[in-house]
Image (cartoon, rainbow, N blue to C red; front, side, top):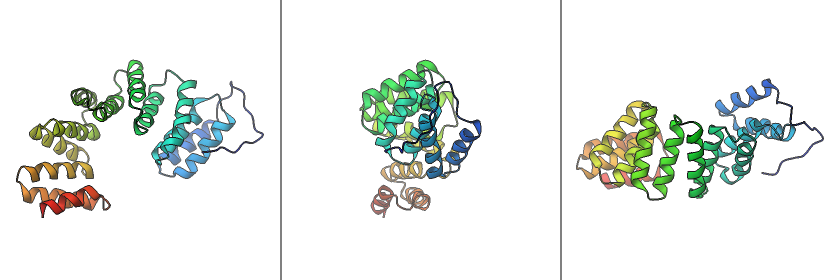
Length: 231
């Protein structure tokens, strides 16, 4: 996204006003992404040597599926704050989504060097290994993420995905069940569990989980396909 330039300048020693930082965070967390993007964009222009505006802008663009646009702000935030594990993890997610898997892996591993207890980075590294076809490495990282954060529903679901790929359907079913218990509105976990139940011949249960997935996510194409196979 092209930024509008203005006459306001800031020295590298200046910090953004705390009130504006809090406004960015509040709007981001409340889902008011357009307002949050405008504020973060303004901060990156007024305080170009402070990492917050770039980091926030990258995260907002990533959240709103402007993946290519998020790359430069993500890279800038890491350049300005190379010891920020969260910024490195955010950059890794963007690189993963852009299919730059080697760079994504490197970014996640740097984040973990800085923060060995960063469960989200392990989960994201697992996603990268999964996309690279390294299933055992993906499985190891998902398990580490869960060990660090047992209530991490997304990691349980992702572990289920790799276990399903490895043909370990019983354990995969347990992972999806755990993900649902932690996050009852997790449509993807309901869908994946339905597939395993269908393949194991538990048709009524598979039907129930498929219907639940569609009630949670109405435009869920894969769930409609699965439901048609169940029927």
